[in-house]
Image (cartoon, rainbow, N blue to C red):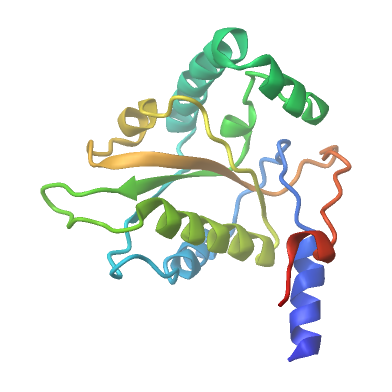
Length: 199
């Protein structure tokens, strides 16, 4: 048991968020299996308040990128605080989001709230957050890379993905393989004694 837990921890320690994607196609069934794994997440009253919209159509991904970049440009130019811009400066990000087009697939995750065909959910953000964590893990386990992208605001995603108003965008995840020249920031993670307390 310890050996399995350590091996899993080591494998997950290799996970990185990637912004530079190769265009290589993802084998059929891989994303579906990862979403099936994500859908095993616990949720308030077992309502399972999530929707995973997978975009692979180039025209649809182009629309997504154009709409996201319009919001991101406004955010970086006018709405983002100097503190936030300083915090992300070392990551080298800006309003440009080419990964929304170059990744072979983009998964847009929605929270499902009460509507004509959906019951009242409980602990929505917590439930969807757990499911996204499982999705990231499943994709990494399958040998794929991803990135959690949260344009602000995100309501344009309902139109791009043709989703009803009771579904609220949660996160955008481009998925694929890293480009041969992909670079990731040299980040360190806090040691266990900083993030865990045992009494």
